[in-house]
Image 1 (cartoon, rainbow, N blue to C red):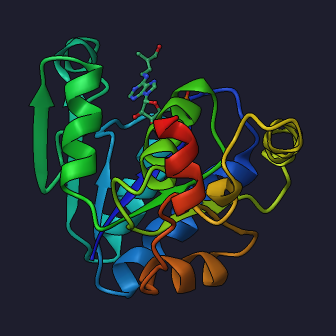
Image 2 (image 1 turned 180 degrees about the vertical axis):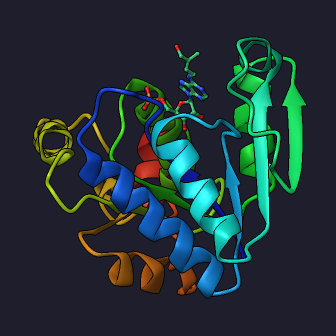
Length: 194
Ligand SMILES: C/C(=C\CNc1ncnc2c1ncn2[C@@H]1O[C@H](COP(=O)(O)O)[C@@H](O)[C@H]1O)CO
């Protein structure tokens, strides 16, 4: 499989997050998968790609020209795709991937998560979308979406669209499983049509 990993670019995080990214990269290679990532050398993004390659895995990095210019591009990547901008980058990462894994991260990671999550809730794709969150960074996000659901702002299938996991083993079990489609219900489509 081609597995896309979204994760942190921050240089100010605890080492445990870098270790988690490295563990994911090593496991991905051990299972024979290809890594699709944002193609940068920094932080968890660098940790996951270096570990995948060290384990013999193939890596595909997708990076906008602006980040190549500030020299964070992963020039050792098996394949390095340079895009015109961040939007094109997300499109290429999406098109090249069979499944998506989200590690702890900041707003860049959240932006990537929301785009893939929204498309899955709408039934635009049914590829696995997994969050690996051993230390509960995303608990406030779960609470926020739960509150939105309670007040009618989100569809009922919003939680089914993501597999929330806390271990690397669980995360890969979900990434490799054939997911159930989470299409909007007929009732919801009827409501949307008015
Ligand atoms: C220029 C510097 C760091 C480079 N920053 C990034 N490099 C590559 N990709 C990035 C960068 N910032 C965001 N991204 C994308 O968003 C995700 C990480 O964002 P987060 O805010 O750290 O969660 C990541 O998956 C990338 O696709 C030094 O100043």
